[in-house]
Length: 221
Image (tube, rainbow, N blue to C red; front, side):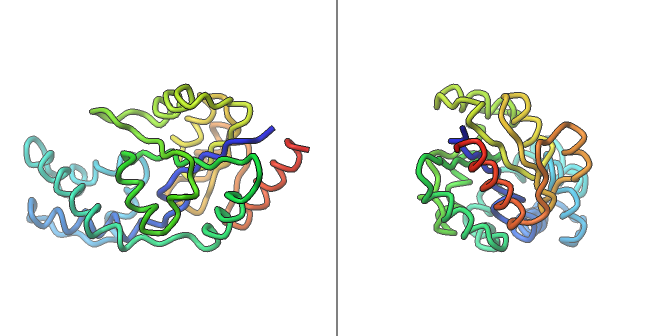
């Protein structure tokens, strides 16, 4: 039976390429003389995206930490307003939210408070039973976040699907025993996600809808 659908946020629900790359560049103007375009930043948005400050703008030490702090302020006050929803995702979430016995969750690499700002902006916060993300210091892996949250919420991995666009999303699901759906329309590489054993692959939101509805029908009948 399928009860729990766990969605990554960036690259899955929200197209944040413009938002994140713009915020990096605006932040870097305060800390570095190196000039960059959004097209320079976007290819680095997958994975540990905060390394952009190191890899492109060559920041380190106290300056690096100050830039990361400033980035957080700017993305949460202005940058998030540049985010877009992927075509069809609102309709899919509406449909799933209304299905009996199906619970929706967000499992993001963002701290939960940041995810909630974006979800409220897009009027989607009420669709989700809980928003997962790292809460302590340091960069917890998606696997660690998911393992802790599933235990705290008493989610049965046999009833759970992890949906995301990055290797870390698929690995987290595999590590925690859930089913997994990889998305090729986000920031990650399709080949990498399939190489580690994603159960299904969707190239569009419409394909994701078809996979989910078929999975729910087969498992819950």
